[in-house]
Amino acid sequence: MNDWSRIAPQLLDATGETLYMVGVATVLTVLLGVPLGVLLTVTAPGALAPHPVLNRLLGLVVNLGRSLPFIILLVLVAPVTRGIVGTTIGSTATIVPLTIGAVPFLARLVETSLREVAHGKVEATLAMGARRRDVVRTVLLPEALPSLVAGVTVTVVALISYSAMAGAIGGGGLGDFAIRYGYQQFRTDITLVTVVLLLVVVQLLQWAGDRWARRLATH
Amino acid sequence: MIELSDVRKVFPARRGAGEVIALDGVSISVARGEFAGVVGPSGSGKSTLARLVNLLERPTSGTVTVDGRVLTDLDDTGVREARRSIGMIFQHFNLLDSRTAAGNVEHPLELAGVGRTERRRRVADLLDLVGLADRHAARPGQLSGGQKQRVAIARALAARPSVLLCDEATSALDPASTAGVLDLLRQVRAELGLTVLLITHEMSVVRAVCDSAVLMSAGRVVDGGPLTEVLARPDSALAAQLVPAPAAPETAAGALVQVTVTDASPQGVVLQTLAGELGLSVEVVGGSVETVAGRRFGRLLLRVEGDDGRLDPALARLRNAGALVERTVAGDPRPEAAAEDEPPAGQEPPAAEEPIVQRFADAPDVQR
View 1: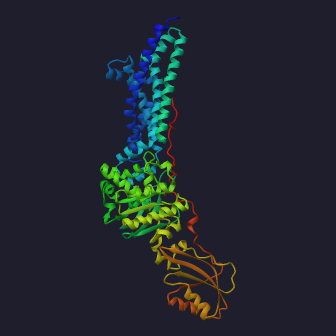
View 2 (view 1 turned 90 degrees about the vertical axis):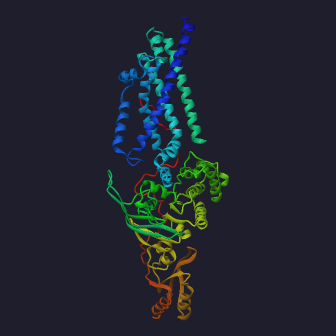
View 3 (view 1 turned 120 degrees about the horizontal axis):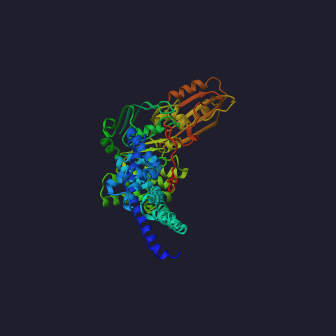
């Protein structure tokens, strides 16, 4: 089967699509997930700005988002996707369910990271006359930064796995490619190549994320 | 300068724990420029007391006045403003690991909106003041405990406060670092005219730096006053902890006489009277003399033999003349256990000791 010269450019395109989907979804997820995680943290009982009702509501939404299998979420948010992007097919459309799926996931990781910040640091800053938003800006986020970076890395890796799943319903990218060529045309070699590619991408991202987190923690 | 008036603090009942009365009608008053100590065993409410002064905890009832301002009447904005004039240092330093030593000192200045050039200048001055000018670029993790507390002191002084609160500030330090930090506190108090409220469970710290102290027990102030006055009261519970009375020997022939030694009532006249005038056999069986608040203070236990009935009148005569002497009984049980051996007090109310080490890269695994 010497059609690799035909397949290789498509494989490259598919990789590009995956990186595009995951890249844009990561940016959106960080923009939405970090504030959501901060809100979850500060509204908890005994935290900076306790608000039990809001806290429970946010917790419910986050848990709902996290307990839905991603493949179900994909189908469920299709109308939303069509509303925003105009279509449910292709890599741009896939960004919507990817983001919706990853935001609650990252929000929980952010919450865990922020809760690790010693309460004494918060207290010392309040004792300086800081406003609560100053505490979030100058204490919680910077002190948790190494752990936040680790959380984002985990989220990116999860996004790659989601994006491959989205391929099953025409989402584009490596997952789509593996299903169309590898599965539907019984080309196990193509499936294997996409798996290796995904593995390489994930390894590279994890390595970069770990390195960054470590650098932040020890500099 | 600091005035707490009939302050009560009740922590409401939570799951699994009943209501906790941390402070029960506490009134204390610290004069401008005074170095005041608050001592007591853990759980006595002394840390809660410190946190009431800058309203990190709001009292359930009672008023807190600092520098003429009634903090308990202020709204959140007013309280934040007032906190700038109250510096605070902690047992675990609470420095930010994401900042250098200089960055930590700069933090309160940033929050106060001080301009960049002015901030830099002030940070350099402060690090110089605490003797860490050469470590300005060090991270907290690269500093020793004593150095961390020095940075914390510089940070607490950055906004030019008039009051400094020290919550168990030396309890996590070794003796040498403790001495260094106490020296620094004494020095900045003198140079900047600060009023200092120091919470501690270490009597040696109170002896070393405080002008006055209160003793707390179960949320109440049970004793207190200027140390020189407290120590001159032989029955004072605080004095008994500051300079524990020597243990009386189990069996002792003759009479036991306890002498409280102060600058105003030295032991010489007592010895002179008993041994010299009465010609009794006097032997020192126990005692200690310490320097407290810059003055000599101690307790001696004397064994007097050969009393022929003249001892009691002689002691009465000495008491009238201002000497602090009294007869004591052999094997006298000493109720007051020295609080010194107690482990470093945790925060009351019961809060788990927070980890000092900043954790990183330990986010949970993918959960799906």
